[in-house]
Length: 257
Ligand SMILES: [Zn+2]
Image (tube, rainbow, N blue to C red; front, side, top):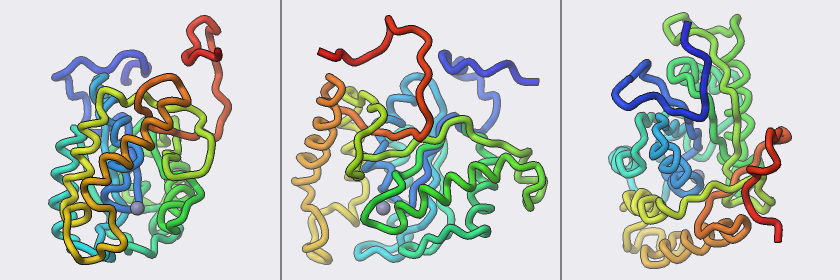
C-alpha cells in the first residue's frame, strides 16, 4: 500500500514512484493551457510536483498550421512549461462533443496517469469546445473512478481525481482564488510563443490573430489584473465549485484592507 498522501511535501527528487502525474490540465486545443494556466503548472513543478497536459484535439481545424506543425510546437511548449507528460487525443477540432466514447477516452488517460488535481476550462465561454470540455472532463473524472466502467484492465485500476479546478482566465466570472505566477510569467509567455504557426507574424488569418508584439502586452495585462485582485504582481484565476475549508484563520492569505 502506498503511504498516505501528504500534499504539503512533494516526493523527493529522483524517487520516481510511478510514471503518472500529480496535476493534469485538460484542454480542448493545443495552446489553451499556455493561455490559461501555464504559469500555475510552472509554480507546481517548481514545488516538486509532476505536471501534465492532455489536449483533446490536434489542431487540424485551425486557420494556420497543420496538425503536425502544432504537435511539434506543443512539444516545444511542454518543454518550456517543464511538464512531465503531454499527450493529445483525436477528438475533432471544432466539434468536441460530450459523448460516452469521449468520456471513456479521457477516463483511460486518467487511470493511466492517476492525477490528484485536474484543471479544466471554465464552463462558460465563447468557444463551444472550451465549455464542452468543462463538462466532458468532469464526467470523465467521475467515470474513471467507477469500478464497472467499460475499460480494459490494462488501462489501470479505477481512479478518481481528488480536486477539479476550472481555469477561468477568459471567463467573465469572479475567481475563487488566484495563483501567484509572478516568478514564471516570462516563461509562460515563451511557452505561448512556441506556437509559431499561430502567433508568428504572417499574413494568413491576419485579421483573426494578435500580432506577436501584442501578445506580451495582452498576457501581462490580464495576469496583472488578476494579480491585483489578490495583492500580487501577476496571477492566474481559478474557480472551484465546492466550498473551501479553513483550519487556521491566522494563516489566511491576501490582506482585506
Ligand atoms: Zn482553445
